[in-house]
Length: 159
Length: 288
Image (cartoon, rainbow over all chains, first blue to last red; front, top):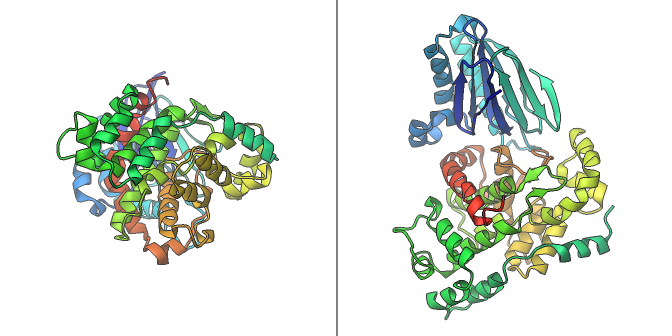
């Protein structure tokens, strides 16, 4: 069963039903997991920061670093494989936080807020999510079945 | 609970940084030292020489042209900077293949160390607070205590993790279960290795920047505190406690840390961290 690893600021898509798309060490970063059961295809992005205006030059070479440039690219990559928006199941995980009373490190929260705004505008419904909290996560999407899991603190849960 | 005798025995057993390093640091403090002096010290160690050039030529250090020799690297980067590069190169082979108890392999630990070093320097620039002396090295070596405490954590990891899951910050859980933490032990390792005081300060206080004694450079400690938190937030973490760490709000008033500035630092440094992270295999002697 081939594993396809999604690095930080990267996205991957696959139509191989035997493959598992996986990303590690989601701290404040967010992974969006997309699955089309009709086309039998999956995709995942591991973005780091909310807005490309932070570093427009970086956004050109690494669009998957940012929510606003990376998420549209993930959906376009799914469409390019013949997926349709109405069939797509979308799940979200990550966006962790530190114990940070003043919110100085609220990157996870900002990552999540931007994603919600984008999905609201585009009419995308989040089927399931596991976000926030002081934990780092590993996310897996099994392309053949659409099964998604999240592992943190040594425990795996279904998403 | 760990006894102080156990700790001392463990620190003694730890592999030390190359003996060359102590001589290099002595040179770095000597205003009369030249590139030739430096080369004389480092030349007998061919692995250190080769890896020093590899790291010195990485994009992060921004050399105007490629350094083909140690002497050239010293001319282009300056003696102090080359000492910082040499320390990072000497540090890689000391990291055990797997840190027991932290569920971390050597390459992940190295990447975390590099990420904190790079974030510390970039933060200092982004916040325009000036770059304290030794910032890169102190950032790189901030977690050296984990090389010692890891051996003890292995038995107690379940209990530490249980407390972390219940909301206890990781360092506090270490203290509660082990009776000490990687910060206290880090300062001991720094002393045992005769590292410069800045390294010991940061190893000791990077989780408690508000408690630094007056003779310690608070700005240096605050920058590494923020950089360490940023590294964990960005997924360059090391320990099973992951994000369970407290942020000292004072870094906002003292250093001007703000979320957007942290984002700017994180966005601009990913490639440098990856590049230096990937140099680990060669810097560690390709043993892993």
